[in-house]
Length: 113
Length: 117
Image 1 (cartoon, rainbow over the protein chains, first blue to last red):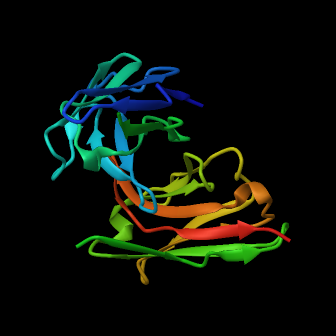
Image 2: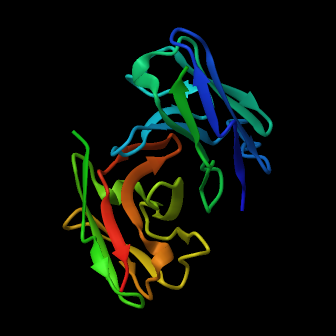
């Protein structure tokens, strides 16, 4: 199984500052045919289902604010929030859907400093 | 509008069974990959199972393989998860989600399964 390891486990950032969450896959999650990475990022707030933010490592889901961006290659991926807003307090998860079993990272709790 | 509504959760004794349902609207299950994801209280997300549009690709996480079965009723546009031989470790909120090559953009609100004597 592909293991997705996120860092850090928790993060406190000041309003308006940049937040960066990392995710490392234990093996490749890209197809050699199209070189696209099957990695997604989700935001989950208490009592709510997860919300898709980013797919294919860097494509922003429709309706997601442009302060959220995804990047990465190989086995290292990053979710960046360029200017933290109060409503961004949540737990963030990465996921690989390249091969079953699809796997999630352990989650990163983002708080306001 | 895409909607997913789970039902069937509840309290069950260890060793018991439950069948979860996920009623879909706004799209056809027969054209979609569908997934179950669970989340134990205070814990992270765990992918459980998926079924493809043709029903010829079904996968499970190791911890449920042989005990859980995913299925679909296209006429009712409903996804199911039959759960047998339940243990305390299966206690979680179970979400159904629609997915594809763009991750999981649509999720239900979840149904809570509690396994306890």
